Image 1 (cartoon, helix red, strand yellow):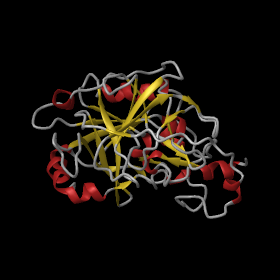
Image 2 (cartoon, one colour):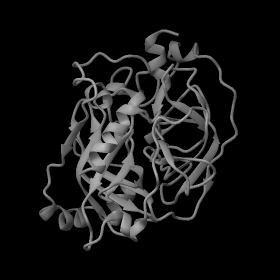
Image 3 (cartoon, rainbow, N blue to C red):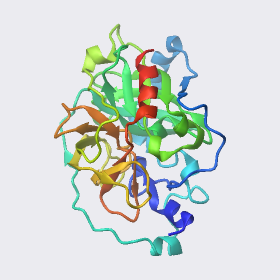
Image 4 (tube, rainbow, N blue to C red):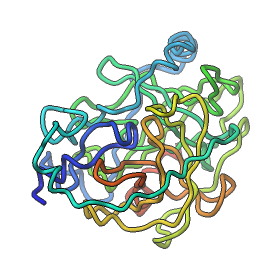
Length: 321
């Protein structure tokens, strides 16, 4: 398949099976920062002003109506920022057929440390999934890179984490971010191999995030082909984004796009981006990836980035703030 056809087949988990097209091969962009350097930013709103403002901004209706981040990182689009291959597109017609995997998403009760992140990008409100992870500051949230930064328009704003979100409610509050952190490969060129990011949130009511909802252990540079359980809040049909779901299964290599990401059997859709992957059979395990993307030519498989040294460096800077 040519590179244009490959781009046309790859879609973000933020709208899995109905989302932005992404480039599977190298993307031409500005040079990356020096090796090992991690790009971070402080959000534009100050904490002294943001908590009350964002509490007021993220009403139940705005949270329900936020879009899965299907146009974030528009550089992934094969052409014209379209959201799906055009009807009859020859490259897609030539794409190899993949075996159908039975859907695996199972409805779950809310988990206090797993929730949604809401943010604004280029004037539009979006939603992804996320998880509280252990750190020295007890205030670190793991999500997908494409839920924090866009190559074309930069860092997102109005970012809040809502743990255990349920039908427009925030049972543990809305946690505003004071900084966002991602690997340079993601920030400079939107390299899908590095689609992991971390937010550092402010204390709420005098307590840290981990003290309020708990935090998962997190691992890096672990073995490949492990068995995972992935969680998220899928919002695109047939789901509505109002409850937590999970998928589980053994991970396999990406044999379509040749990325370093791994895939598991999963039919979660838009809004699940950034949801945690745990090693083992449940949410009590160690987080080792996030929901990232899928292919329009491959049914019911979700891919997550390998948590290697670059994503680990982003985490280390976030955790130390």
